[in-house]
Image (cartoon, rainbow, N blue to C red; front, side):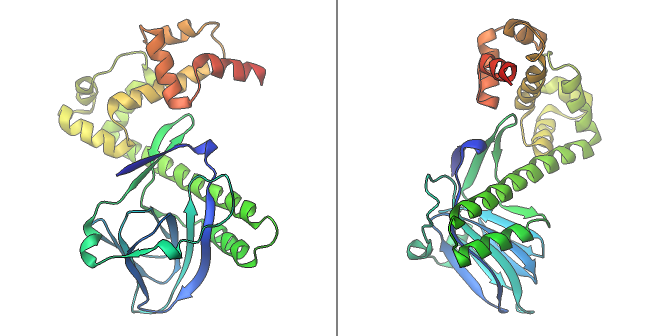
Length: 294
């Protein structure tokens, strides 16, 4: 199950419920499904999280993300209490008015915990589509979780707008962390890094998977799997992203779009424009005009 949410810059996430609290040892929630999405940050203590046939052991700094139609169970360790930050939210709503999830939470049996987790895809301008991870190891979100919970408790004028701003910051921070970690994972694989460097050095070349695999010294099938694991993309899609990245710089200097397309190895201007818009949300002409205007 996959839901495409649209462009990050156009999303209007709304906090439906938030709290920041200490849960006694042995406390659990679920198995259940929720009507919206939820972020959970373990601030102190330990816990376990079951979903999609997996059981994750959580430590301080671990952050969970999951959405509707994903049966799950969160259990606080019997060793002692744990401190949690929790945010229920909707990804896109014109209003900042909260819709409390409790009335439509559905309880399940443990057998449902093997159901696949729902995937949420966000289009990050200039980088393409990114599937939100379900698990993050990130230690810099505690203050933002606490601020959202404080706004939700006191509900002073404009609290929904303030909470939305903090939530956008959290979601954007997670996506940045995810993309940065994915890139670092790629460079840690020295032979994969050689293939990536080849693409970056000669993006105009119509690289095939076997050619890139030969640079890395792997069988093409295994290389494709390793490349996707390291970068999050298939080799062909990564080439498209690199071409668009370079095209954005070239468009600032080249007089014509045709010249940019030719420099990046496109024999079809239509194909170049289609790829460019798929990644950036703008046509090359719109991108060029916007930057001239600035």
